[in-house]
Structure formats: C-alpha cells, structure tokens
Length: 337
Image 1 (cartoon, rainbow, N blue to C red):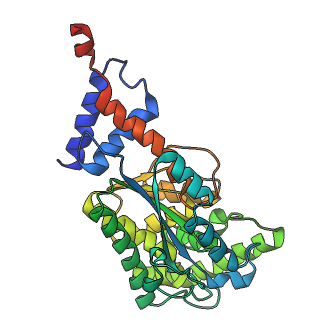
Image 2 (cartoon, rainbow, N blue to C red):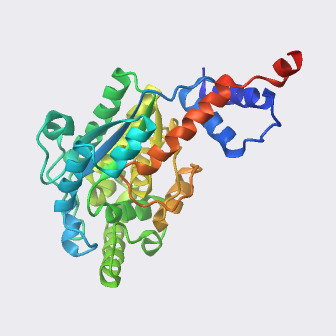
C-alpha cells in the first residue's frame, strides 16, 4: 500500500470510530503519520530499537562548552552497561538499545559498539579547517546505513535515533545554519552547558565555519556538509536514509538528530518519508530545523539531553496510536450492538 493510501485509510478508520471525529486530537495525527510511514493502516510499533551513534569532535578544543571530550567515552560506558538516562527510558518503554561508535577518540571494547567500523577517531577541528574529508563522510553514512539494515534483518518496526558526542550541538548548529539558511546566532544554544564566554565563542565558531562552508553548497553539497559535520550525525543521516528505503519508521530525537535528518534530506529528498519528529527541544536551533524539515513534533517538554531520550518518550504514544487504529470499535458496530 502506498503511503498516501495508508494515511487515507487510517484517517477514514479514525473518523468511523465510536467517538466524535478528531476528538483524540494529536493522537489521531500520530496514528495517521505512523500508518503513512509504514504504508499500512495497521502499523506495528514493536519490536523497536534505539540506535545511539557516538562520536567526538575536534571543535571542543575551541572552548565552546563545559565538558572535555573524555566525557563521550564515559557516557558510552554508561550506555553500554545500561546505566544511562536513555537506558532507563528504553527499559521503561520496552525498547532495545544498540550503541554504535561512529567516530569516538576512545572506542569501547566489544563488538556491539561498532569499534571495527568507525569512520575515524573524532573529527578535525571545524574552526580550523574541514571537519572530515569525503572518505570520512562516506564511511559515516555507511555506518548508519548498516545499522538500519541490521534492524531490518532483525524485524525491527521502529527505530529511534540517538547520539552521544561532546561538542555535537556546535556541529548541529553549523549544519542547521548551513542547510536551513538561518542566522548562525539564532541556532546556537547552551548544549550540555555553557558560560557566557563559552557561548560567545560557540557563536563565533559557528558563524565563521558556516561562512566558509556556504559557498560550497552551490557546487558540492557533500563537501559543504563534510566541512562542518560530525561522524555520529552523518551516521544518523545514513540510518534515516536506509530506514526509509526499507520502510522502517524512524523516530528522530532532538536538535542533533534533527541535524542528521537535515543532512539525510540534503543528500536524498525522499529520505524523510518514514520519519517522525518526537519533540521540539529547548535548543533554539531545533525549531528552525523542524520547520525546515516540515516535521511536526508531538511533545513539547523542553528536553535537551539527547541520547534518544525524547524519541523514547514518544514510544508509549506510538503504542496508543496503533491501538486506536486496531482495537476501537466503529460507531456502526456500537449501534449494531
């Protein structure tokens, strides 16, 4: 069934249920979008998987935040051992967690972190030159595509995209300004924390990097993206593209995951056909990203953690949306007794 036909069938079903049409508000919109992403009016929500892509960023050297790159590895250890925020929310929502090291400086031991397929040991400092070359970009996109392909092979119905990488809100701000045309200062926020000095430096770094990258957009979009991109963000883009190709629903988390969605669409205009935006986060650039993507968020909870936590919070709502389509009697059935 085509996406349009599935959405129409879901809409017709919802309007026929034993309730006033539209009375469940945004839940009905979520049910229609879920059906649309899967091309079926009886969409699945399980099994589901959170894929957390990790990477480090040379721009941390510029003093754009409070935390050193070593925190990326520390948080990867928490995720790998099930003691992070996303681990707790995943367990609560019945979601499997897979951690993929797309490009950290200190990879964890063990095959589940993807240590053998990293795109690099952190990106170069985007304030001083290109963050990565074409080979690094291709490798990161391939890492994400392989993660989505494995999910498809495992029968996963819904993928949530998460990320971990100190400094990656700076990278996301660069990509947001570059690919939406928004002013750099409008998309820069505190990320994981800032001082007035670090925030000012972050704004300056983003503005300068985007000014250098923007002329490339007309001749080589990939080079423009690579000049400011992060390995984990490009892996998210690759995952979104491959999930769309395979008909898997993708629930995007916050600002950084949204930057990955921007990259996916810039490289493939149809890449978001199975994507759902979980929420609008507190980072100022997220609203601009969602508007540019044309994705309406379903939660407004001032989230800014990342790790896929916002996407995980939407999982019970996906279950409710699917149940609405599946389990509620029609008005005709109710009258007939």
